Length: 116
Image (cartoon, rainbow, N blue to C red):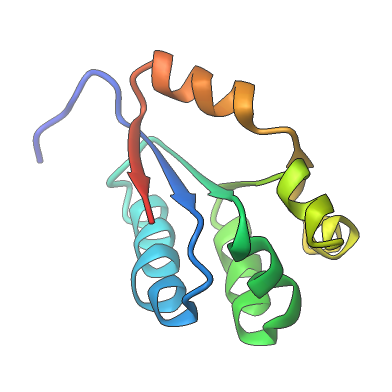
């Protein structure tokens, strides 16, 4: 496999579509970390995805697996607060914080970004 200089991936999950979450976002972030496709993987929960995750047990169980394999999972605090789900996400082991600055740092540090 070709080794790139910056082998870091951030997946920005904004969709409330659970099929997209299960069959692309979660599958790829989990495998990307487990199979060492990326040195670092971060999953950012932003917007409607925070509400979806707060009410969907299957997605919650999957996110726990993702965290267990070493994916850094973060959620936008402004978004989570707007849906009143900050505590629900924190209980899942997700770091809830204002994400504008961290996302900007990912971009400036040339992380590979997937937005869905």
